[in-house]
Length: 144
Image (cartoon, rainbow, N blue to C red; front, side, top):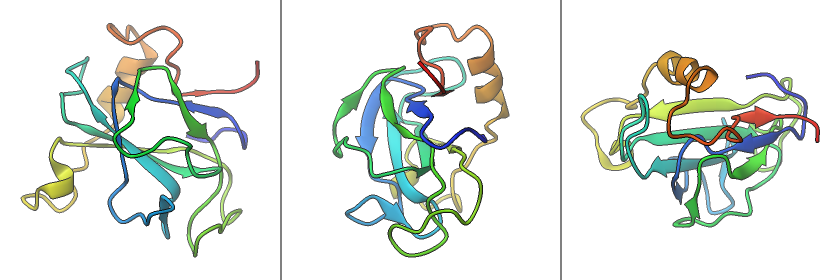
């Protein structure tokens, strides 16, 4: 999702912060730049408990630590243009948020190549009646 550099990124669901697969101790992935994942704490709309939400190309490393609890609507980072190179690489593409949605257990489950799921039902749900998500839980928000 294209957005201005520095736009706030919010967690889609309550959950636990985990380091994204392939990222280093600085939360850097050569492809995704600064990344993090949130493991869903409960079922909500199309999300199932244990599903993983992947946020990539963040402006900087998130201040959150692995194992930290987050709530739906909590700021977890800012939109950036990081990635496609060694730690700190930025500007190789326009600022945007790469949101991935992975079936629960992806981190330790080799039964599927990636566990990635089509994000369209999730985005459609977020754009409509998000049910249990708080109204402030916009995925990306600019200004104010």
